Amino acid sequence: MKKDILKEINTLPDDFLTALRDVSQLTQTRVYLSGGVLRDWLLGVSAVDFDFTVSENGLEFGRRLAETLHATFVRLADDEGICRVVWKGLVIDISTFRKKAQCIEDDLYCRDFTINAMAVEILSDGAGGVVCGPVIDPLGGMDDLQEKALRVCSSDCLEDDPLRLLRAFRFMAQLGFSIDRQSTQLITKFSKNIVRVAGERIWAELKKIFLQSKSSEVLMAMESVGLLQEVFPELAAGRGVKQPASHHLDVLDHCLETLKKIELVIENPGKWFTETVDLIQKYCTDQNTLLYLKVAALLHDIGKPPVGNLQESGKITFYNHDGQGEVIVAAIARRLKWSSVELARISRFVKQHMWPFHLNNARKKTGIKPRACLKIAKAAGEDLVGLFLLAMADSLAGEGEGKPAGMEREVASLFSEVYSTYVLRVKPVLDRLPINGHDLIKYLHLQPGPIFGEIFSELEQEMVLSGKMSKGQALDWVKNFLTLQKTELAQPDTRNSII
Image (cartoon, rainbow, N blue to C red; front, side, top):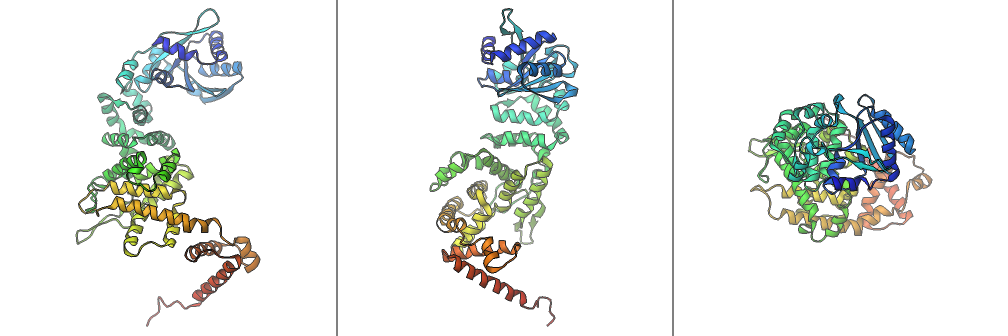
């Protein structure tokens, strides 16, 4: 094992290793490569970020190393002696022994998990080169690596930084490891402490979980120890909330099941979308898109508990739960410090997730017209494909006795029809309107304002129905539209009249 580590260390640039050795000797500081980089190397994974632990004064060591290398020096935590050196694509984090530890072994006991609590000392070979000492592994991290086990170093580590509660599941997702029984008990005990952590730190860990292909299994494991409910208390409100006969699960379990189903659909879209599989596979290549889609799958019915109603007839309703869900997602976004893009795309999925089902009902009665395709395509924007993926997962997650037969087949065929209509009839209109805002100002002498948006929206819908227009025809249509608008405004309002 030592030979493997030395081989990996020797892949680092010679001038970096020389600078590391020289600064160590100059400052009479012992230097250890530690933490995740050793874990990754032992697992056969390459690394570009490196953690070094020094026996004293990490800030001074980092400053001198940066000067020697002509690199960038960044202070991260003065009180803990933590800094960063960035040099030629390498990110080198340097920290002093934690909690005033007197030796590297004591420092390793203060780490989060045993697989991250290993170190090797960087030494001079006496002939101008660099060697490393044996792997220092006081907590049995190497054995846990072989067993694929996640084990906390101590209960204190979870109290010192409650984010480690969530990091356990992030490593579970990334490495495919299992959390050992004692650690699971400790996480359950301290799960409520996660609320002490800043929202942006929680979200950073959650994103890494969602980006794994089996994130649903990890989220379910989080739910079993009470951690998911602390991170998303709005989800916990769905526990025990019964649903109509089309569902077999309560709201919380249905949300988790929908996440599971959407991962299955993403993995093998051709099983359900036989006619549009290439389109869906292309859509699913973007990692950020998958993140937004999977988070939305988990949160899509989050608006149900506040609006649920049991009618006298025994019918269960959740009217406007999609709109209520949008409001709740906005509150979650504020708490977890989502970016504006993250909020916009996730909340749009939640707000619109019922649209395909409503459109499918209309299709059964009257068929769907190009105008309806225009509305849903404009509303969903870049996520039209994702909206139907979410609908498919939502349908698959409901297996109650009252579920209509063939629902998944209908969702897939509806998407095929919507998309083909969009490509042939709608997109050409959206791409090439015959007039623009300058034309409205120049030829019709209109003042820019909200009316412009209304005009173009109505013009798009008219062109989807009637086909292409020349500029003159479009301007005539606008004149007629404005005339009708004035006529309607001129009509007396009799809504409150007493007859």
